[in-house]
Every structure is written in C-alpha cells, then in structure tokens.
Image 1 (tube, protein in one colour):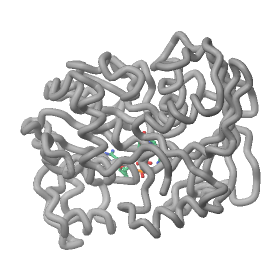
Image 2 (cartoon, rainbow, N blue to C red):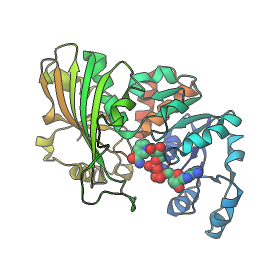
Image 3 (cartoon, rainbow, N blue to C red):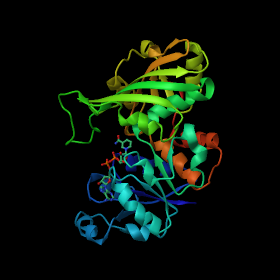
Image 4 (cartoon, protein in one colour):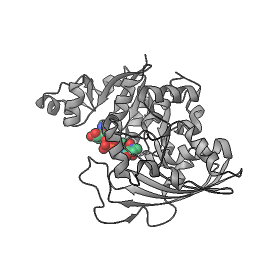
Length: 343
Ligand code: NAD
C-alpha cells in the first residue's frame, strides 16, 4: 500500500491524516510536528508515528514524554507521497527537499500555483492530476466555488460568475487572529484573489470576486451570480445539485435554520467527526433562476471542505484510480461524505 506522510499537523493536516487512515488503499506513514502540543500528544496516544523537521526539535518532544520516530528526511526516504499542510508559503520552501528525495507532494491553497504542475479540484480537473508529481489542492473558498461551478457547468455550461465572499476571520482554535469588531475589505481593491485562483483550475471562465472578512470562526458564506449557456429553471438546478457529490442542499424552511451557527449545531447533533462538513452547503431557498442567470447563497466549512479533494489528488497522482467518479465515490463512502439534502 502507498505510504503517505503528512507534513504539518494543524487544522488541515490532522484532518487529512484522519482521512488517510480511513482510506483502504492508503497507509498513513506518520506526521511531521514542530511543537509537542496537545495535538502531538493526541497523535502519539492514537499510535501515529511522529517525525520532526530536524534533530534540534527532538529534545522538546522528549521532555513532554512524546517519542519521536525520526526526522523528516528519514521519512522522505521511505514514503511514496507527502501531503504538505504546513502554514501558507512554507510548503514552497519544503518543495526542494521533496524533489531531492523524489517524493511526490500535494500542497494546500496557501501555496502559489506556480510551484505545482496542477492546481486541483476533483469535480473540475481530476484527469489533469493523473501521474503528476506536484499538485495543489486549492483553498477552501476556491474549492467551494469550483464545486458549484463545475457541477453546473457539466449540465448547463457556465460562462460567467460574479461572487461576493464573506470570509471567517479565524479558525475556532486560533487566538491571535481577527477582526473582532470590524468588516475588513479583503483586499480594499477589486477583484479579490479568489476568482483569480479559480482560473488556475478552469482558465476559460469569466469570473470576478470580491471579499470581506468578518468576526466569525465557523464558516465562509458566498453570494453567487452564475450565467449559463442553456436556459435553466429552478427545479433543474436543484436536480443537478441534488445529484452532485459533495454538495448538500439546506432546506431552511423545513429545518428552521438561517445561520452558520445552526448548521454547526446540526453537525454536533448528528455526531459528525469534529463537527465537520466536507460538503458544500447550498441554501435551497436562495436558489433563484431567471433565464440564463442563477443566483444562490452557499456556506463552506473552511476547516474540512478540502479534505476529500486531498484524498482524490493522492489517488490520481499515484495512479491508484484513473476514473474520477470512482475515486470520488470511494473517498466519499470511506469518509462518510454526503450529497442530496442536509437531514
Ligand atoms: P495550521 O497553522 O492550523 O497548521 C499548520 C501546522 O504546521 C501547525 O501545526 C504548525 O505547527 C506546523 N508547522 C509550522 N511550521 C512548520 C514547519 N516548518 N514544518 C512542519 N510543520 C510546521 O494551518 P492550516 O490552517 O492547517 O493551513 C495549512 C495549509 O492549508 C495552508 O496552506 C492554508 O492556506 C491551507 N488551508 C487552510 C484552511 C483553513 O481554513 N484553515 C482551509 C483550506 C486550506
């Protein structure tokens, strides 16, 4: 079985490590940690082998009672692929090392497109990642945009997208980020980088985005205006979304919900692992269709949405599965990713 190392065990890395352990065709070789914090203790307790970037890190782990299996370079000699989930721009520095050991690498959205062969989204361009050495799973916002765009494009032909993005200020565990009392333009010019990032995967699209950051940690929310080639109607759009993997429609009338807080409460009440939504959540009552124009609002759990894409990227790069639908189906079955309607 291919051996996979996860370098960077934070918000994204620990979820990808969990997903690799749940994948029947992948082996989690170990994780690379820099600090002997609670997540290192938990990984250690759960029998995950811990590596550190270099020898000078070992002492602090041993002082905290965590045994270290080895250093990154030793692990790179043994693995088939590394998932780099280190902080933004750190992966670019590690790439040289991965290349030195001839190890394929999946990078995350905080890295630049130009360090990889392909920027990736399973529904949009799985085939382009087959056999590649360096692939970047785009950011949480970009993944959410690409899932909706590529699902509608397959059936109706998308030609133009305008999106307004309301971003969360920090992840729940982060205590040093903000804002705590502001709406911050991100950036104070147009367009925001999100549309540009979408084009790293589907360069043919006419897309412009604007973004603000607000004081919440739970989810991002997008308002989208999508122009399609074929005239559509609301029930057709709902039918397409119902049948697209990794998209969940939210019936706000039926469930009596209108906020990200209530979505998180549903995740808690239904015992989702870590309260995670791997799915893109589309607010059904917002879906409005006027000829060739589709308008909708969607929410994204930023901590989790990229996880299934990371597993598919690994499978494509290692040629474990060349059919994208088979990989998506396997990933979703093994991770419990749903589609259709929430509840
Ligand atoms: P994080 O800060 O939660 O986790 C990064 C981990 O890497 C931390 O545990 C940190 O201690 C460790 N680390 C720091 N320097 C390191 C080094 N030199 N070598 C090895 N490990 C090191 O960050 P995150 O939110 O998981 O983000 C990781 C990547 O995923 C970034 O590219 C980010 O842009 C992207 N991403 C984040 C989110 C999100 O909402 N958090 C969503 C999608 C994509």
